[in-house]
Image (cartoon, rainbow, N blue to C red; front, side, top):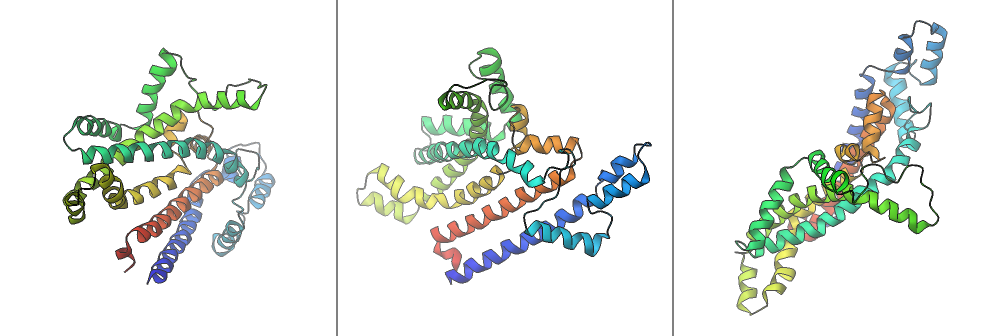
Length: 324
């Protein structure tokens, strides 16, 4: 039964990815701004140069089946084409150069949010009506409803522009030379504080509210009543009985957010001028660099599908009833 559940989920994920690849192929070829169309706007460019450009980018052949078959074969091999704006640089290299900063920023923010948000929500739900519940739930609602860009601008205004505690933009100080790796890490850490805080605070609200609601649902369950009747300490009941069962709904949300970590929150990276996939998307959109946009869309979509598959597997492991 467990094996059939796993293969069913894997099959659904593979089918979804194939549909994403097909949509990715059709969607971006329907948009204006291909290289030959851009060149055609210049009256000084000869028809021969336009034809050479069409041949170079493979758009001189029929859309179906020639371009479709070539696109599928290239995608399977990891070839996402060439960037318009980066003078023919492979899209995979363009994306790979921006993937590390995004994973660093949103990975740290996600880890902090998981521990703080779930811990705060669990304690607030367990001590319902107490000071921590009232204050924590109120703050979580404010953070959950606040857009990333607004939260980032508030942190910039207070801690960068007013107090001058942290840098306001970038990943490192431009033009600065480092005498040691520790000096580089210190500069990187200073630039990380505000963007990571923005990501973490935005996610803490989600996790805290969800975890609090899950804990409240477990308070009236029989196993909690039985544990209390046995005289088990309140803290142990919370850690060993309430939290493991209340984690089930949070698993799906965490896994989905992990999928979006790969592409990042565009607004956070733009506000802090962080050199990740978010700013790459904005730059590619402004330059109509559709191969890069296509690659980012594919990476984001596949990461979300794989994150959902991971959530289904973890959920099935935690709750055997799901595998039935």
